[in-house]
Image (tube, rainbow, N blue to C red; front, side):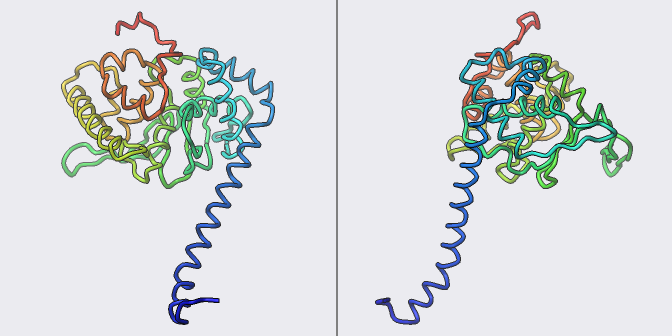
Length: 291
């Protein structure tokens, strides 16, 4: 029995009811999703998948036993939630799926994650593929043509495209600073804050401000180096825009961590805080590179 006047009781119900029901549904959905993922993680990891990882993904054996176990848990969830499609005659198999998943899930260690929620399907070509693209020449002049690519993804497309030979080479050499899987999945992390701006979803206002200040400086430095032809640790493709800068920085963070920390200590610290890990601990980076 309500002690409110009838009109107030009715108003309270009509405004609060639907919102409360939506909140209740969201809580239930989140609970069920988490329970399903925990069940996936509890399954024994397939031996054939583990063989693929040990044969294909070079960084895996350098991880601690704890990190290896966490990575395998993430792979179970990832492969249950993401679809794969072969393109240009490529037939999808476990080798392709597991090799991609292992590299992508390296980005998820030590963090709460929703497993790249905007991504539904991964399209895989055998090798470099061609796309139609407009390129700005100067002023009002643009040109159209075919552009070869190793991978791409988008915030609203729900899919990612990867070239299988590039996936394999990236997995085989974890210290050359180039990894198409890390690059494209870094874009997916960037999209989690609903903008392709080079700033992923960060935990606090202080972290957001620190990230943007450091990134602004480092991005400007890379663009200046690209304009003048000065050699850089970071791929100068990162000078294209802040989103590409973040993606190539993630490649360097995981594949050239010692060099990145030496040359860009503040940016390395920001990446370390975001990913909650230090790849220096398991890096295969070689000192002979002269960094």
